[in-house]
Length: 327
Ligand code: TXA
Ligand code: MG
Image (cartoon, rainbow, N blue to C red; front, side, top):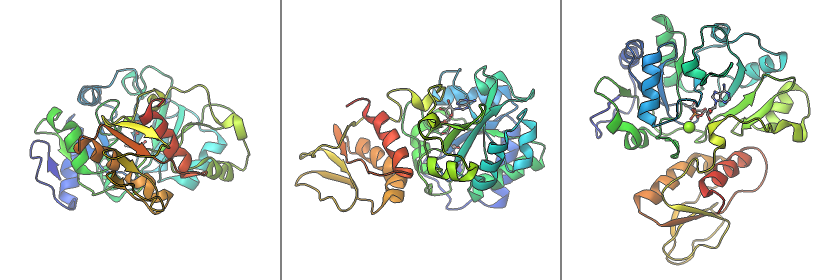
């Protein structure tokens, strides 16, 4: 656990007592940042409008951007949604807990302060021992769900470590808020968002649960129809996932520039190699941390060689396109 104001004090693990304390703190309307397998989330009691409004002020995020509600298990979903299509049940069964968010029609208990006034709600069961322990603890004391966006300032790169959370938002937290330290996130990219309000699923944001995995689970092939044009996901905005260092894609880096590419690519003389991942999974895991490092080193610009292929590579290219913002 880390208290918001003590930037340097990290504990390597979260004890059961710490988790209980964090759950109680949420219940009192405070914020708890916690690790998930994708990125760190900034959590508040999803039924508490005051707690949730603090998420928006700490992030500096516009009020009409909806939040994902995190649950500890599938049965809890009935509190939050009205109806669940058959294919969404298949997806939930196959990939929860995991890096996937389902958009469903909301129930009556879901406040406008969660959905930005929309009649749908995003739900996710994360696959991380600390996140699940926190969700369980919260449920034991009467909590119904934890609303949590990525724990970064609006428009910035998502944090994949407790240190990165602290750099992003510690100055905006109070001494009652907490940051739970669970080390580095295993996936490193935000969850796949699947709109489940239509006749077939539509991917609003690609992630580790790939198009192929979704087709396999629901036993349908979608091709182009898959990519929804109705995207309310804020990650779809330009200039999202942006470091200060200007990102350029698929160029030859020159001296003084940052460089991120698979390990098979060599580093030209004078270029600052930010990471050399050996495969796509590692590329996803280190991407945000590499972009953060570029900023720490005050690099004016960073070149990224985009990974080819399907699956997770699609999600990596999606985030890179946004980080590069048309360059
Ligand atoms: O992996 C993740 O999804 C992480 C971890 C913490 O769970 N969370 C995350 O939350 O990335 P956030 O708020 O940074 O991004 C969630 C995206 C936003 O772009 C939001 O607009 C979209 O999900 N979203 C949430 N509810 C939605 C809804 N009802 N309809 C459409 N999009 C929705
Ligand atoms: Mg985010």
